Image (tube, rainbow, N blue to C red):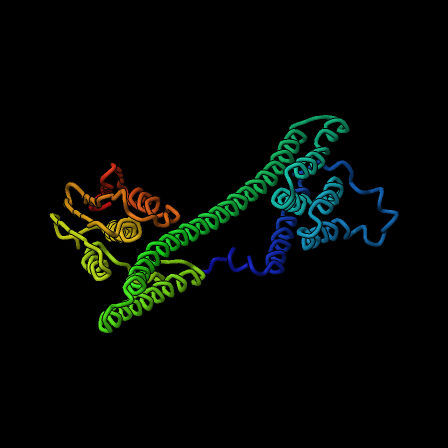
Length: 390
């Protein structure tokens, strides 16, 4: 079925033409009813005082003026208040109550509430004026008063209701836009966190191998070639990861389809081998159910936490071993522990920005888990718990 309202929404001229035709048809009905003495709106004058001004049109003026009032509804969107006041003045002489009600509806739907109340009060002024000027008050006068108040109130009330609906729709649209912007901002914050974790991991590998070349100038050509190959491979991988992140950032609308393939905790072996290839000592203990059954988002968080733990170890405690332990299952969740000894006589190293542990804590909290760290004179340890599924 054709939605007439939507079809006319984009064609205001056609919509106004339909309003004019409908108002004219109802005006003819009202004029017929007034021939039998039934008035919808107070008539304070018969218009006889205007007959000397237009004697030739007096016979047809009673029908021409109401129809011209209907035609004036073409301008109801441009000058709603002026048109409504003009029709109020005309309604006390001619049967133009239908276009008057349409004009009042337009004022209520398009103008501020204060303007609507003022115009409504002006439209109701003929009611008490009729009660004062009428020579007698009877059932017809009372019915006319009730119909006038009900008609004006109904037209204004319906216009206010429509204005309220439009305002709620506009507010809902603004809220939807705000939520979408917040979602995009959240996605970009996630991407920034990914950038920190991925690039920090790759760059620390580069730093370790470059440092090895610097502090071992007497290394054999084979060792130098091997270190250079690792540096080249790590640099290339870092560039690829950075390109993936930038591609997502350049996407106008961030969505799951724009993100590159994400790692999971099951890829821990690759991380450990990269660190071992850089000279780190990493001990891994596992006592878990199949890691592939974990919730993908939680598994990704676990991977990034382990990646950051390896990165921090290379940056702050490369002399000692890193002990990693993964235990748990679907019932108890996943528990990750990471610990390494702390040497008091180790050389001074840059402390970094301190964002690694903060990011790990945030990831654990966002995944519904927790993180606890312990520092003693001899050891540093992290314990992270993550739910197996959300």
